[in-house]
Image (cartoon, rainbow, N blue to C red; front, side):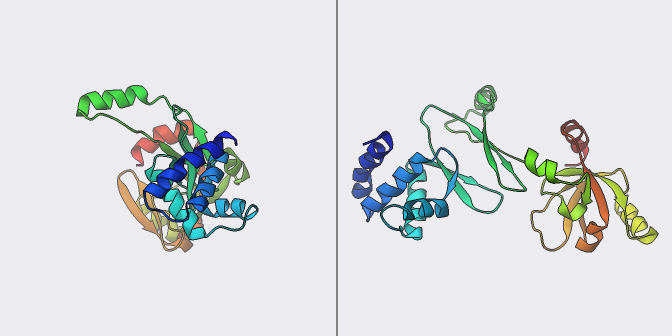
Length: 235
């Protein structure tokens, strides 16, 4: 019996004491989760377990994962595709996550937050017991796959870009100028919805741009330095 089986076996008694049925199935889900060193969804665990002693009930797998979160055995991570993924908690090892807003890729990162957390605790009087940082960005693979210029409606939520060209003729350019948008403007996309208007911010102003109009506005990605400096006026 390996270490993952041993841990799952120990928690069978906890499952039984808490009145959960199908203890053996819950133990199988826990063992499968512990064997994953990456971030896994409920559906992926169902597929893993289906190749063993028969396919488990997907609803039971989801319930078991929520149960493991309550027990402190797992951490949920909300990915950009709307799916919740889980990783098992490593005792004594802390890490945070950076998530690609385009493809949903999740990467573990080490952020030296301890000093900041301790300072916040001193200033607020709170005793910090848990921290978990999630940074959302665009991964190198997705960045490399992009053209140098792309339409405004393809900008990721939260991303800052610079307007480099406005199509649609002089009337459209004048209309956008009256809204505060012109070639050279740095804007940030605010909404995550891919339907309806594109919501952007310029400075402290939010603007709603029709999707057809947004497709005629060409933008370019800012590099990290530009995004942090120019973005101060665009949040």
